[in-house]
Length: 373
Image (tube, one colour):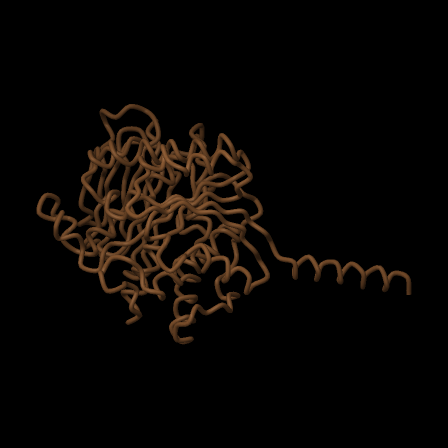
């Protein structure tokens, strides 16, 4: 009888612990994309509906850039310390501009913000807020930079630049833009407000569900909060976040080993975790695999580490795929079209070190670290 009572007490304590949920202190640094519909509060209410809680502060002046945040109240808020998560959202257009401009006006200040987060909050986490392409692209700036002429072009650039910042500056990234892209392709939910740029309430709810999953490492399907949209739409949005974010959670998280998380990354390797590649390995056949399930395509890159070339093998139709290699400053070094089953990416002339390899299709992108020996 005594054993039964002890077990019952243990189960009660476990239930109480679960019921209490988690409490996170979150700082939001951004602009109107964060401020419209009060995104931090939507995340707070979504978390409360699951038994979790966030205590948040925010600094979101309209149109504010990372450069401006480096010299305004945001730095004072970071220095207060005690933050579990610091969310960083750049001005909505800037990361999609020509690379030379992004290198000068975005990347250095993104790194300064991330470094400040970890200097004051060594146990905290910097998290980029990946935004979305405008509904019909950015036609005004497309005159000087044609890729911005369409939603797909602008959105792909935003994805590429935010992934680069997350991987290079040691941060997580909340892929709200990827959730929107999935919803645009598969539903008729209106994500934009009337200006074709800022989020509707549905668009902000999609962002809130994505942030909930990233902040608490939990499924959005547990969220019961609805901000006042059709329940059919709310459920569709939560399902989309489950597919795009939670089912591949480790891909979006800070790329450091975490043994408490299942390995659900969309980048898979046959012999080791792609987020902690050992440059001393003697296995010359180490291969990294990409999946593009919407195209039923499997792409392999080997070896990694590589010497003077890397081989890219496409299992399925290669039409519309490109490979682009960047250095850690974001400079585009090499590119090739994957029009055949096997394509060789030359690495000769490059210094030994870590590079960023992106495999791009019209609707999606995969990014890895490629090591040159």
